[in-house]
Length: 146
Image: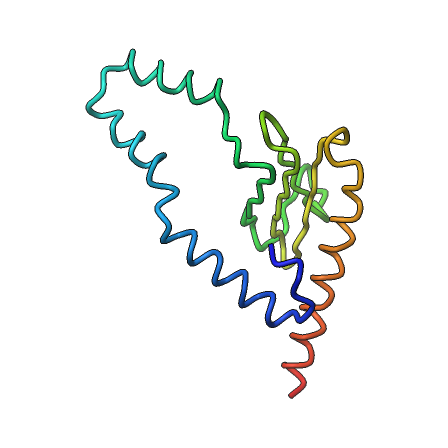
């Protein structure tokens, strides 16, 4: 995440560039190769490979962010309308922060979960997310007014 970009437009451009580079970097090829190998490798070896992977973990992952598109219409339970939806993405293994983003009925909610021992100042991240989103909304409103 480009925390060194104060300008919201520049920040979005940097994120788009980074995401494009990641998509074309081949980092996801390892998982895809393992999944496609499942058709050719005996189940015992696949199970062994999965166990080794789980035991060794991914040393590069500290934060996971995921977007969960929700329904863009209201949901009801026993006649009561659900007013808000909040994501919860658990942490585990080497993941110290998880960020879930969910859309529901024209709203967007962000849920941040963290390991307090590893990230005692998680509130700083949450405040930064709120400020960055406010900057983007202000920028979008300014563009719409023009």
